[in-house]
Image (cartoon, rainbow, N blue to C red; front, side):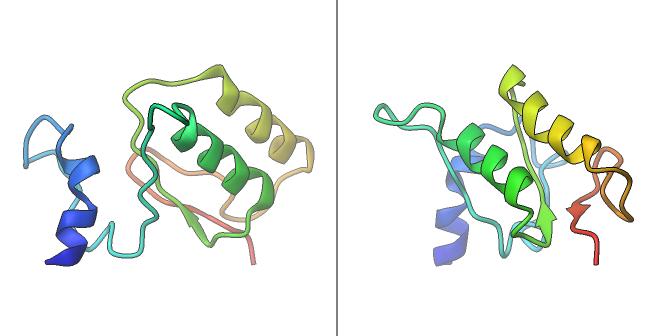
Length: 97
């Protein structure tokens, strides 16, 4: 039950349960929400994850896209192709092994 409460910042803004990801998909997710003190917190977290690739998966729900996403993806692109470095909609981005 505690995990469901942790996910409320995500589920609160989804249009309906038919389109919502199941709790299993988000079981190990880091939920990062914007605050008055740090309105760019979700974007900053995402950019750090892409730049560092210190994670084995990147899953993101973003109602608004930001140009800030471009730079870390461009950096990864310039490093050259790697297995599993791209994803299709609805899929996780996995770090190359």
